Length: 93
Image 1 (tube, rainbow, N blue to C red):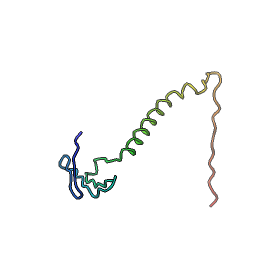
Image 2: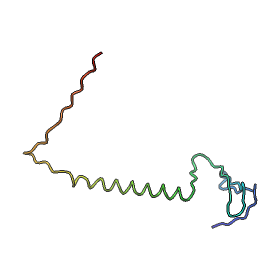
Image 3: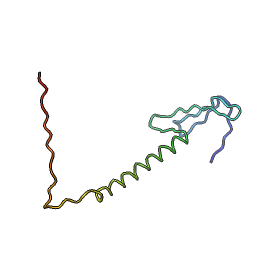
Image 4: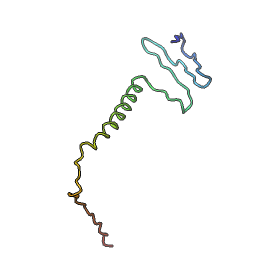
């Protein structure tokens, strides 16, 4: 990990296309401005963790869905399920 000391208004350049500027630093807070290309995703840590957690839960849900087939009632060839017919009527003009 690289640790840098910067004063207000000073910048850090990453990879020629990401610029971090120290906007304000006082007490126990530091405001920074990040200028990066649109294709570079920049998240606060807590937001990033929430996104990762949500993605993991959705992946787990997809796995669980594959198990739903086991819960569905088995159909025998002798017992055909009844089909529903839905008829749509035109509204009178």
